[in-house]
Length: 189
Image 1 (cartoon, rainbow, N blue to C red):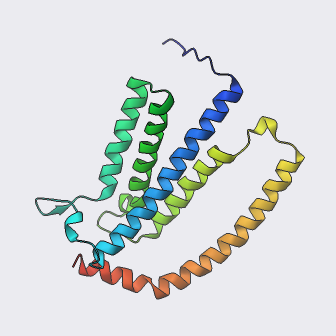
Image 2 (image 1 turned 90 degrees about the vertical axis):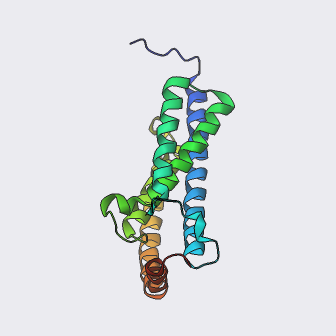
């Protein structure tokens, strides 16, 4: 197998990687949030239930659309080798596929389980965090002591934020959770 000859300088390659990771991250977060909002609106009867796709009485979950998008982008990247705007569009489609697929990650683990599984949120936070690190993190070769101090401060802040988020999610689960499960049990109006 022949090694690919790229004419990009290491700095340009890093900038391109960061740009593509930012596009993937933006599409991923937007898709996750949009999917959650649409599902809530459909289940609450604010949008028509026909937006849920059924085949012979079986609901086709949007993680399936994500799997197809991920498969397509994999094929495009391997066989098409896009550059420029086409590469950016491929990154956006990849982010949408990730968002649709990981939004229902809990269903990978517990087929037939409820839509509102904690595993899905955990997966989205993990994937989003990794994308953010790729998009905005410095390369380790360029780290200086100030970067490590910033990292330590960030870890402390994330721990505080995680504790606060845990408490607020626990509150939200007690207040909002029963309504979401009721919507799911009732199905689209």
